[in-house]
Length: 129
Image 1 (cartoon, helix red, strand yellow):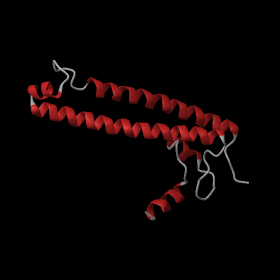
Image 2 (cartoon, helix red, strand yellow):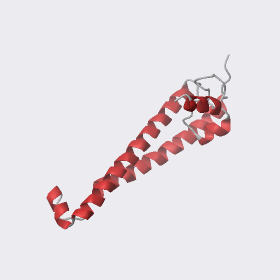
Image 3 (tube, one colour):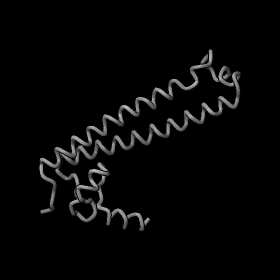
Image 4 (cartoon, helix red, strand yellow):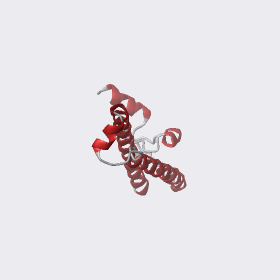
């Protein structure tokens, strides 16, 4: 039978993951607000009114909005990975390397809450790409 973390350890991991998910949800809310607020300083909301102010400003606004969408996408992806980690906690598969089946060290799991591979397997996996 494969090694696994105790129920008490899994509970600690769950608390850490849920706390991190709250932080990410707050960050995503801030980013979303930034996307919605971007460009609201102009009198109208049409594209023409943005360009009538200054084309360089409109370009900067567009670039910032694109960056915010990328950040939002990255945070959303991480949030979903943490949700998957909670599912692995429920099934008691959390912290077990998906490749070799060994227990991933607690230090790694606390640093990378959504880790699914031990360092050795992750390194080998990257080298094979």
